[in-house]
Image (cartoon, rainbow, N blue to C red):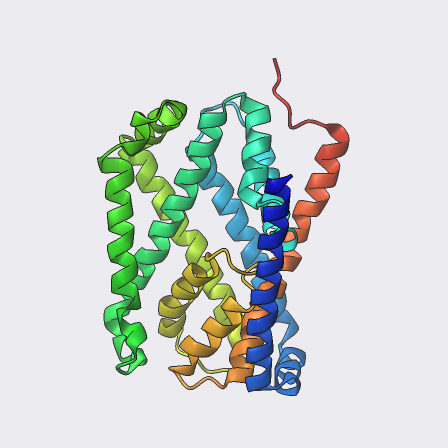
Amino acid sequence: MALKVNKTVFIIIKIIVSSGLLYIVFRKTGLGEVAAALRDVSIPAFLSAIALSISAQFVSTVRWKLLLPDGIGLRKLFSLCMIGSFFNTFLPGVIGGDAVKGLYLYRLTGKGSLSLASIFMDRYIGFAALIAICIVAFPFGFHFFAGSPTTWLLPVIVFFFIGASLLIFGLRLGQRIRALSEFYSYFHAYRNQATVIGKTFSLSLIVQLAGILGVYLLSRGMGQQIPFLAFLLFIPLIVLFTMIPLSISGLGIRESAFVLFFGFVGVQPGAATALSLLWFITVSFASLIGLVEYIKHKEKNDFTRKE
């Protein structure tokens, strides 16, 4: 009962944070300006962004399959990825997409530790790819920040990422906890497979670049002339911001971050907000495939282990 109450309170807090930040953003930009920018976006750019989002999910599926033992079909894993995307987008306060993927994968394999470890490694490598793109773009786009305190944001993120990686992989803290020992056995087995890690990292770069390209195409479809370098630098940082679990699907946080970062390259707040919302809308459209997959597989009940 207490857990249910705490979850409800947390969802309410997320709604308040998202609503508050969106109110501040819209008050600054004006709803009319945002609506006008949304209406003017070209249909080809919008559809291209949706296609890139779906393609990125497929590449993510291939990446995840590399972290799993043989025997699980790519088609079924793609269904899981799309279902997870749907839950992340439309029901983030109810149950997370990774939790849904982990549950269904457990039903398929009967191995809870394998499910958790594969999803964690999938996320970890994706996170590393985001940071890598930022690091490569940073020396060329350093001038965008123009002495802003946010200049130090990337170095701080890299520092904490390296520190967390050392704790997880170097000290093997989880092996001291019996309940987590099997999880860490799988976890550290991945670490010793350099070829697999290299392939998954390369696929992660493709996934992240597809997302960045999607936002860039949306901006061009709005008539904005923003250098692609700015997207390589800002979008990974914005994605990292939206990972903070304090809002509904990143709403409010993402829009505020768009206004902040793209303001460095002269984008008006209204256009930046519209671009952020367009990105969210395209991802939402793409994730609707997950709803179809969820209904289909729930009726068949085929996410179960075959003995």
